[in-house]
Amino acid sequence: MLSGRRYLLGLTADQAEMCEEFGNICRAVWNTALEQRREYRRRGTWTNYVPQAAELAEAKKEHPWLTTAPSHVLQQTLRDLERACREHGTFKARWRSKARWSPSFRFPSGNLITVERLGRKWGRAKLPKLGWVRFRWSRPLDGAVRSATVSRKGGRWFVSFLVDDQAVTPEQHAMPATAVGVDRGIATAAVTSDGTFHDRPFIRHGEAERYRRLQQRLARSKKGSANRHKTIRAMGRIMNRVTDRRADFCAYTANRLATRNALVVLEDLKTRNMTASASGTLDQPGQYVAQKRGLNRAILYKGWHRLELALTNAARYTGTAMVKVNPAYTSQRCSACGLVTEGNRESQAVFVCKAAGCGHRDHADVNAAKNIKAAGLAVSACGDLGGGRSVKQEPVSRATGRTPS
Image (spheres, rainbow, N blue to C red):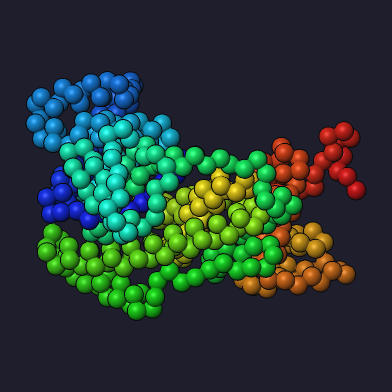
């Protein structure tokens, strides 16, 4: 199967300048092609990759700076734009801002890429127009290179190789009778139905204090000044460390869950919709904007979506099945007797069932994870429930059309 391998590049000054230029050219091609697509849509027509690729070849005659970057890199940019417009829509595809977008470009032809190992710590790759570039050999490739993506993050350049590692998804998990439900939260990143809490701090106290002071300095700096750019780079270095810790946590947690369980059940959470702004419009201003902003930051800080992506990737190698269930009432339903009421959850961490004769007590997140697991087992058993039905509803018999007793 296809997998990614990411390495830190050791570029020379000339190579770093060329990578910066390639990224700027790809950004200009993306923005121009996106604006062209939007203009076509405003007129009631449309365009796609084929005519835009032909127009790009003609544009190189009028604009020689386009020939600086490899042709197949610019063509790949148009293909990426084609995919973004198909998946998200022409007017929802993001504009690549010079201030917010980090330079990146892809070499799609694996037969034009040569990778060699120089020693224990270093290797090198031959990329079109860049020549031989050195990178830290932090892990083996374990496969044939299909493509390479060069990107900049926090002032450092990386190369990501897409390789075919020849791995095959197992037909059956090593422990086929195991299953776990995962509840993603704000206080704890992930809580499983067996009572395990998965969490770690992604930013240290000193880093948070320094970031706050850098934000104050940024607010007082003049736009476009050298000090402002210096402050932004310092803030980026802190956030890059936070992002790397979050990615490490998600990959480690996903590997443990996928290795130990044949079935992993998650809530079908729409993270993008949940973290949308509540500011509203000029005509209808939003309510509780500050509280919603804090909730959005907390959700993004815990990396809910990134954990889901890491689980999907890890499941390919273990044969783990992933099921998403409707999140409704999972935090209010008693995992012991099934009573659903708002009063069951007394606080963020305390769950006490109010049903007469039950009185089940548990950690609120663990109880929710047990409900998620039960709903996932029902989905995997029936195979047709999906994530659209609430766990509060009782299953209906197909034969009789009644709820089984």
